Amino acid sequence: MERYNIYHRKDGRWEGRITRGKRENGKRKFQYVFGKSKEQVRHKISEIRKNESSHTCSINFQSLLEEWMCIAKHRVKESSLSNYRLKADKHILPSFGSMEISAVSSKDIYAFIENKQQCGLSNRYILDILILMKSIFKYAVKTYHIYNPMDGITMPKNGNPEIKLLETLEIKQLEKYISENRNNTTMGIALTMNTGIRIGELCALQWRDVDLEKRILTVRKTMQRIQSIDGKTRTKLIIGDPKSESSKRNIPLTKKMVDFLMNFKGNPNEYILSGSEKPIEPRTMQYRFAKILKNAKLPSIYFHALRHMFASACIKLGFDVKTLSELLGHSSVEITLNRYVHSSFEQKREYMERIQFNF
Image (tube, rainbow, N blue to C red; front, side, top):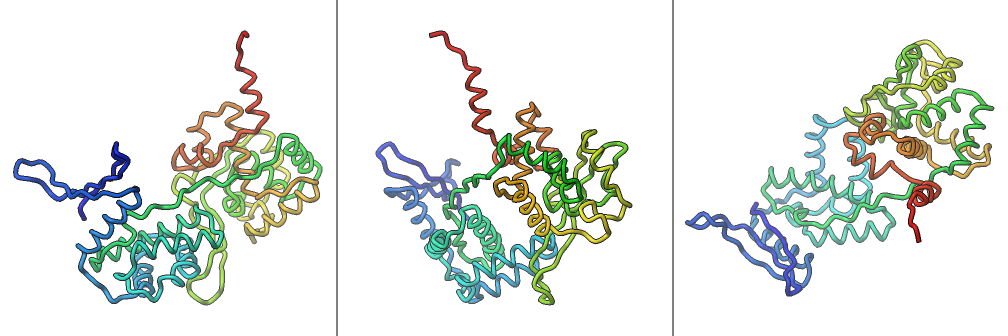
């Protein structure tokens, strides 16, 4: 596929340049396309490429998906495959399942995006669906040599959703409730507030993963309920490797946290949340957390907000971002900064007060 670039001209128009090989003197040859908007130029280039790609294929998208899934299962985790199946069954197949893959156009993709936005799906979730479609069509292009309708598609802007957190006084109120109501559930909440671990990682923790003497918590697995793809049950609970290799990590524990944990220590095979060899799954922990917030007369927040609160607290205490990123198990510091670092209005005011002018 020839490369192309799009530029905004000084006269207000948009110009697209498609690379068409090289001249005898070694300089590149271009085909030029013009339009009133970037999107118009991108559409014209897409049409040119579609006309140049004369291959047709009678296979429908449903069959292509099944073929792609059979290959994908050898390289991705079971949870990822389940996630792909869920997105495909719920969103992609109702729109494209019966269509021949060479008949799908960029216009169909844009109509699909608009429909999903009108249905209330977030741009972030729509983007996840489109990334899946992109992988499937990339396989189709390589295998059946069709025109790629995803080529040049402008993806929805992925804005970070605002996460509701507890204010400073509310955090103190939650800490007080935990101190006065010590049990396995409040211990799990305290552990998350002190380490920022994910709820799936927390639910998968066994006492073998906690070295109280060395004060080290080892994250080596996670738990989640996924859609079953074998058809025997609707869903199933799985315990497997964490989200990524960087998610496998050792987290130092504070002395106060170790003292709290000592009251509940069990044998190595017991899960720390249940106190038995039978685990408590994430959605159960979510329900228990919601009940505790209600009992403590605190506003409702997601359990995941505790992870955000931990990250923000660390930044406020002066943690460098690289260290925090490793504690959270992120693959890059950009994820830490863009998604997990939040400053309160009080913190903004504190920083602003440091600005001194002599008027």
